[in-house]
View 1: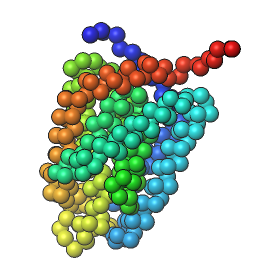
View 2 (view 1 turned 60 degrees about the horizontal axis):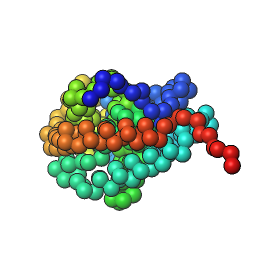
View 3 (view 1 turned 90 degrees about the vertical axis):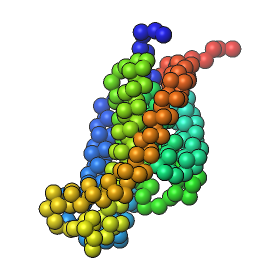
Length: 272
């Protein structure tokens, strides 16, 4: 083992302008998840599902903007795009294996590892493309898909922002982040579904115009009973076990691929 920590490959460089767009989009996305706690909308399914196309329309342009901006600046090349396609396809293939049974989700551990190796920009894009591709394979396209894409992108983004570490310390950090990511994803998706699935006639339902603490208490009970104790915990265990067992090998493979690909290196052609 060496003490040398190589710099992260320049798959998608976050220069100031794309970083600002990405930060703005992330904050807007979180605001769209949290609107029931701060707004006073009509608590019906029709009112909330109308948000999904908006988020979908807001997420995709950000992804396209990041890719196109980096392409125009020479920050991403064909090798990075090919790698993105391969990892998206692998992640899409992994998702049906667990099918979410008991919270078993095999999408997130690879997303965490890839975001860790290739950086926050790559992790953000991979989060969206993985969930979008897997939804097409599993017939999981619906109003929830844009929210799943955005939540997964934030997980990939966060993985790329983790501090430097190596060896067992890095694996321990990634396990902790994988557990956090599992509960974070479940919390956001519960927040999305809460206003119309809990119903306004139950003690767990969203009450339009109620004080923040009252709605927050209702939501906390709702997500603990419907998601945190079941699906999210299963997802957290899956992430932790997968990262412990497969993390070191996959990290080595991804880093070897990054070294061999030499992202960002100028391409020169020999003259015949």
